[in-house]
Length: 302
Image 1 (cartoon, rainbow, N blue to C red):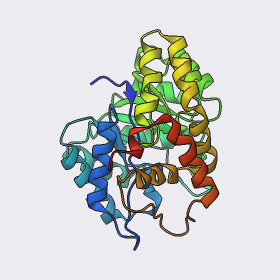
Image 2 (image 1 turned 90 degrees about the horizontal axis):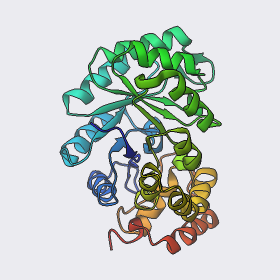
Image 3 (image 1 turned 135 degrees about the vertical axis):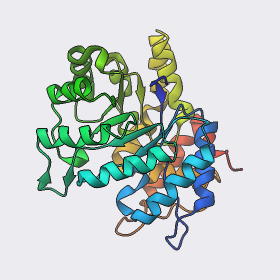
Image 4 (image 1 turned 30 degrees about the vertical axis):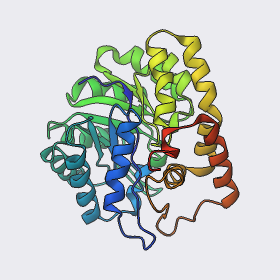
């Protein structure tokens, strides 16, 4: 498998009553594939994993893998503070045909955080399942993942192959990780909706895990950059930078849902309590920024 390109996070659609919209989930996956996704991640933070029950996780994992049916590689997020549960989730995903699992280091709230050794041991335990692992280095966990620890994990845990670096100054960390880890760092990715994508590609990122909002608009940045067409990559990024900034700083995962409702992909942009709906003016600005780009998401379902 080539660990490159754009692998967006699929949003989890709900009906207005808060129940899972399973037919909408299929449409989300089809829309992402039609946008040119090189892979798809489900049950991530931008999928509202922290608002989904264990039973719903199993339903969504099974539905997503069966519906995509090998059209693109599938990444299933399995993060949990308990190592046993992370291992069980990895086994479940692998048995259903997932290609990769993604996980943050063990944490629970502000005070329960795994130390470096505990983090290593959890990833090693999941590695025994025998499915490639993407390490998610995200501020949400509050756990520091220094480069020496990530390099050790890559060198000593065979299944640790991918790294989603979305911490502050991600490009600096990507550059150091690649320099110190060498060939063990098979797939350095960035995240955070691609808000630092150009700098991260300059640092050696092989791909990006964005939201699912404008995959077709962001993918050319990566394609041009990997082909050495830096001016074209810079211009392509300039086209989308403002809407990515608005998404990252003002909307979060709700941006993708709003765009997908606008384009007829899903019927509702409902988010479960205690998440408030997007402020109307913020939503309007998002759509106004999207329209000049003519992204597929705004016309896919019409």
